[in-house]
Image 1 (cartoon, rainbow, N blue to C red):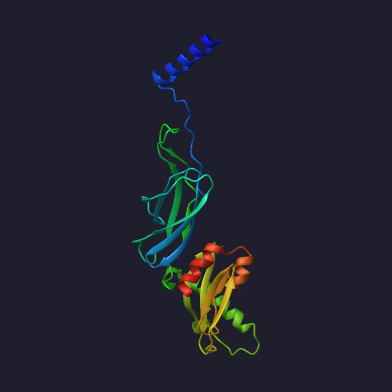
Image 2 (cartoon, helix red, strand yellow):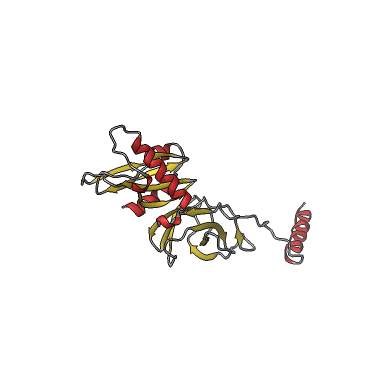
Length: 245
Protein backbone atom coordinates (compact mmCIF):
# COMPACT_ATOMS: atom_id res chain seq x y z
CA UNK A 1 0.00 0.00 0.00
CA UNK A 2 2.80 2.39 0.91
CA UNK A 3 4.54 1.51 -2.33
CA UNK A 4 1.37 2.36 -4.32
CA UNK A 5 0.99 5.75 -2.57
CA UNK A 6 4.68 6.51 -3.20
CA UNK A 7 4.30 5.68 -6.92
CA UNK A 8 1.20 7.86 -7.18
CA UNK A 9 3.07 10.75 -5.60
CA UNK A 10 5.88 10.36 -8.11
CA UNK A 11 3.39 10.46 -11.01
CA UNK A 12 1.75 13.65 -9.68
CA UNK A 13 5.15 15.28 -9.18
CA UNK A 14 6.10 14.38 -12.73
CA UNK A 15 2.90 15.84 -14.20
CA UNK A 16 3.21 19.06 -12.20
CA UNK A 17 6.96 19.58 -12.38
CA UNK A 18 7.83 18.22 -15.83
CA UNK A 19 4.71 18.72 -17.94
CA UNK A 20 3.73 21.93 -16.23
CA UNK A 21 0.22 20.89 -15.20
CA UNK A 22 -0.92 23.27 -12.45
CA UNK A 23 -1.76 21.78 -9.08
CA UNK A 24 -4.60 24.30 -8.76
CA UNK A 25 -6.55 25.24 -11.86
CA UNK A 26 -6.82 29.02 -12.37
CA UNK A 27 -10.33 30.41 -12.34
CA UNK A 28 -11.67 33.83 -13.26
CA UNK A 29 -11.77 35.99 -10.16
CA UNK A 30 -15.08 37.29 -8.80
CA UNK A 31 -16.46 40.49 -10.38
CA UNK A 32 -16.83 43.63 -8.22
CA UNK A 33 -20.21 45.29 -7.93
CA UNK A 34 -21.42 47.82 -10.47
CA UNK A 35 -19.85 51.15 -9.44
CA UNK A 36 -21.81 54.22 -8.36
CA UNK A 37 -20.66 57.64 -9.56
CA UNK A 38 -20.90 61.07 -7.97
CA UNK A 39 -19.69 64.42 -9.31
CA UNK A 40 -17.35 66.06 -6.78
CA UNK A 41 -16.45 69.15 -8.80
CA UNK A 42 -16.34 70.18 -12.45
CA UNK A 43 -13.29 67.95 -13.03
CA UNK A 44 -13.59 65.15 -10.43
CA UNK A 45 -15.82 62.07 -10.07
CA UNK A 46 -16.04 59.81 -7.01
CA UNK A 47 -16.28 56.09 -7.84
CA UNK A 48 -17.71 53.80 -5.13
CA UNK A 49 -17.87 50.00 -5.37
CA UNK A 50 -17.59 46.78 -3.34
CA UNK A 51 -14.22 45.08 -3.65
CA UNK A 52 -14.50 41.52 -4.95
CA UNK A 53 -13.66 38.75 -2.47
CA UNK A 54 -9.94 37.89 -2.34
CA UNK A 55 -9.00 40.37 -5.07
CA UNK A 56 -6.07 42.67 -4.33
CA UNK A 57 -6.48 45.23 -7.09
CA UNK A 58 -9.30 46.95 -8.93
CA UNK A 59 -8.83 48.22 -12.46
CA UNK A 60 -10.92 51.28 -13.31
CA UNK A 61 -11.43 52.48 -16.87
CA UNK A 62 -13.12 55.75 -17.81
CA UNK A 63 -13.72 57.83 -20.92
CA UNK A 64 -15.85 60.63 -22.31
CA UNK A 65 -19.13 59.45 -23.77
CA UNK A 66 -18.54 58.85 -27.48
CA UNK A 67 -14.76 58.41 -27.14
CA UNK A 68 -13.22 55.11 -28.27
CA UNK A 69 -10.16 54.94 -26.02
CA UNK A 70 -10.45 54.13 -22.30
CA UNK A 71 -8.15 55.64 -19.68
CA UNK A 72 -6.92 53.46 -16.82
CA UNK A 73 -6.53 53.76 -13.07
CA UNK A 74 -5.45 50.91 -10.73
CA UNK A 75 -6.39 50.80 -7.05
CA UNK A 76 -4.42 48.36 -4.86
CA UNK A 77 -5.88 46.98 -1.64
CA UNK A 78 -5.48 44.04 0.73
CA UNK A 79 -7.28 40.79 0.06
CA UNK A 80 -10.42 40.26 2.11
CA UNK A 81 -12.56 37.18 2.75
CA UNK A 82 -15.69 39.33 2.49
CA UNK A 83 -16.55 42.12 0.00
CA UNK A 84 -15.38 45.53 1.21
CA UNK A 85 -16.73 48.99 0.40
CA UNK A 86 -14.13 51.01 -1.53
CA UNK A 87 -14.00 54.38 -3.24
CA UNK A 88 -11.55 56.41 -5.30
CA UNK A 89 -11.62 59.72 -7.15
CA UNK A 90 -11.02 60.28 -10.85
CA UNK A 91 -9.36 63.66 -11.41
CA UNK A 92 -8.35 65.85 -14.34
CA UNK A 93 -11.65 65.39 -16.16
CA UNK A 94 -12.98 67.88 -18.70
CA UNK A 95 -15.71 70.18 -17.36
CA UNK A 96 -19.19 69.88 -18.83
CA UNK A 97 -18.54 66.43 -20.32
CA UNK A 98 -20.44 63.18 -19.71
CA UNK A 99 -18.25 60.22 -18.64
CA UNK A 100 -18.52 56.43 -18.61
CA UNK A 101 -16.84 54.17 -16.04
CA UNK A 102 -16.33 50.41 -15.73
CA UNK A 103 -14.29 48.31 -13.28
CA UNK A 104 -12.95 44.79 -12.84
CA UNK A 105 -11.23 42.86 -10.06
CA UNK A 106 -7.67 41.54 -10.28
CA UNK A 107 -5.98 38.83 -8.20
CA UNK A 108 -2.22 38.96 -8.69
CA UNK A 109 0.14 35.97 -8.58
CA UNK A 110 0.37 34.18 -5.27
CA UNK A 111 1.26 30.79 -3.81
CA UNK A 112 -2.07 29.26 -4.86
CA UNK A 113 -2.53 31.22 -8.08
CA UNK A 114 -0.20 30.39 -10.97
CA UNK A 115 -1.07 33.59 -12.85
CA UNK A 116 -2.84 36.93 -12.52
CA UNK A 117 -6.60 36.50 -12.66
CA UNK A 118 -9.02 39.14 -13.94
CA UNK A 119 -12.79 39.25 -13.65
CA UNK A 120 -15.17 40.28 -16.39
CA UNK A 121 -15.81 44.02 -16.65
CA UNK A 122 -18.70 45.41 -14.66
CA UNK A 123 -21.63 47.11 -16.34
CA UNK A 124 -20.73 50.52 -17.73
CA UNK A 125 -22.02 53.43 -15.66
CA UNK A 126 -22.58 56.88 -17.16
CA UNK A 127 -22.56 60.15 -15.26
CA UNK A 128 -24.21 63.22 -16.77
CA UNK A 129 -22.15 66.36 -16.27
CA UNK A 130 -23.49 68.60 -19.08
CA UNK A 131 -25.30 71.49 -17.39
CA UNK A 132 -25.57 74.14 -20.09
CA UNK A 133 -29.02 74.87 -21.50
CA UNK A 134 -27.28 75.00 -24.89
CA UNK A 135 -26.89 71.21 -24.65
CA UNK A 136 -30.64 70.89 -25.26
CA UNK A 137 -31.80 70.95 -28.86
CA UNK A 138 -34.13 73.71 -30.04
CA UNK A 139 -36.92 71.14 -30.24
CA UNK A 140 -36.33 70.01 -26.65
CA UNK A 141 -36.27 73.59 -25.36
CA UNK A 142 -39.53 74.40 -27.11
CA UNK A 143 -41.19 71.22 -25.83
CA UNK A 144 -40.17 72.00 -22.24
CA UNK A 145 -41.23 75.64 -22.50
CA UNK A 146 -44.57 74.73 -24.08
CA UNK A 147 -45.32 72.22 -21.33
CA UNK A 148 -44.49 74.78 -18.64
CA UNK A 149 -46.66 77.39 -20.39
CA UNK A 150 -49.57 74.94 -20.43
CA UNK A 151 -49.00 74.19 -16.76
CA UNK A 152 -49.19 77.87 -15.87
CA UNK A 153 -52.20 78.49 -18.12
CA UNK A 154 -54.09 75.62 -16.45
CA UNK A 155 -54.51 78.03 -13.52
CA UNK A 156 -57.45 80.31 -14.46
CA UNK A 157 -56.06 83.08 -12.25
CA UNK A 158 -52.72 83.18 -14.08
CA UNK A 159 -52.23 86.13 -16.46
CA UNK A 160 -52.06 85.43 -20.18
CA UNK A 161 -48.56 84.43 -21.37
CA UNK A 162 -46.79 83.33 -24.52
CA UNK A 163 -43.97 80.85 -24.99
CA UNK A 164 -41.54 83.77 -25.32
CA UNK A 165 -42.26 84.59 -21.65
CA UNK A 166 -41.00 81.18 -20.50
CA UNK A 167 -37.36 80.63 -19.52
CA UNK A 168 -35.26 77.60 -18.65
CA UNK A 169 -33.42 79.09 -15.69
CA UNK A 170 -31.08 76.12 -15.16
CA UNK A 171 -30.50 72.74 -16.80
CA UNK A 172 -29.24 69.81 -14.69
CA UNK A 173 -28.96 67.15 -17.35
CA UNK A 174 -31.13 64.54 -19.07
CA UNK A 175 -31.63 61.19 -17.33
CA UNK A 176 -33.56 58.31 -18.93
CA UNK A 177 -35.19 60.77 -21.35
CA UNK A 178 -36.22 62.98 -18.42
CA UNK A 179 -35.07 66.60 -18.67
CA UNK A 180 -34.27 68.15 -15.29
CA UNK A 181 -34.61 71.93 -15.08
CA UNK A 182 -35.49 74.93 -12.99
CA UNK A 183 -38.12 76.93 -14.87
CA UNK A 184 -39.06 80.60 -14.78
CA UNK A 185 -41.40 83.04 -16.50
CA UNK A 186 -41.71 86.78 -16.89
CA UNK A 187 -43.53 88.25 -13.94
CA UNK A 188 -43.06 85.26 -11.62
CA UNK A 189 -42.17 86.29 -8.06
CA UNK A 190 -40.53 83.96 -5.56
CA UNK A 191 -40.39 84.13 -1.79
CA UNK A 192 -36.83 84.79 -0.63
CA UNK A 193 -36.72 81.94 1.86
CA UNK A 194 -34.16 79.21 2.47
CA UNK A 195 -35.64 75.79 1.84
CA UNK A 196 -34.64 72.20 1.23
CA UNK A 197 -36.08 68.86 0.25
CA UNK A 198 -34.65 65.36 0.78
CA UNK A 199 -35.32 62.44 -1.55
CA UNK A 200 -33.83 58.98 -0.93
CA UNK A 201 -31.32 60.52 1.48
CA UNK A 202 -30.19 63.17 -1.02
CA UNK A 203 -30.76 66.79 0.07
CA UNK A 204 -31.43 69.73 -2.25
CA UNK A 205 -31.02 73.30 -0.95
CA UNK A 206 -32.93 76.29 -2.33
CA UNK A 207 -32.50 80.02 -1.71
CA UNK A 208 -36.06 80.93 -2.77
CA UNK A 209 -39.43 79.26 -3.38
CA UNK A 210 -38.58 78.11 -6.91
CA UNK A 211 -37.67 74.42 -7.20
CA UNK A 212 -36.29 71.77 -9.55
CA UNK A 213 -38.73 70.18 -12.00
CA UNK A 214 -38.44 67.02 -14.09
CA UNK A 215 -39.98 67.01 -17.58
CA UNK A 216 -40.92 63.65 -19.07
CA UNK A 217 -43.05 63.11 -22.17
CA UNK A 218 -44.88 66.43 -21.89
CA UNK A 219 -45.47 66.43 -18.13
CA UNK A 220 -43.59 68.11 -15.26
CA UNK A 221 -42.91 66.25 -12.01
CA UNK A 222 -41.37 67.17 -8.68
CA UNK A 223 -38.13 65.35 -7.87
CA UNK A 224 -39.88 63.03 -5.40
CA UNK A 225 -42.48 62.03 -8.00
CA UNK A 226 -39.82 61.47 -10.68
CA UNK A 227 -37.82 59.24 -8.32
CA UNK A 228 -40.88 57.21 -7.31
CA UNK A 229 -41.85 56.70 -10.96
CA UNK A 230 -38.34 55.42 -11.75
CA UNK A 231 -37.34 58.34 -13.98
CA UNK A 232 -34.40 59.15 -11.67
CA UNK A 233 -32.07 56.86 -9.71
CA UNK A 234 -30.28 57.71 -6.46
CA UNK A 235 -27.09 58.29 -8.48
CA UNK A 236 -28.99 60.73 -10.70
CA UNK A 237 -30.29 62.58 -7.63
CA UNK A 238 -26.75 62.89 -6.24
CA UNK A 239 -25.50 64.32 -9.52
CA UNK A 240 -28.35 66.84 -9.70
CA UNK A 241 -27.77 67.83 -6.06
CA UNK A 242 -24.10 68.54 -6.80
CA UNK A 243 -25.08 71.17 -9.38
CA UNK A 244 -27.81 72.62 -7.16
CA UNK A 245 -26.18 72.81 -3.71
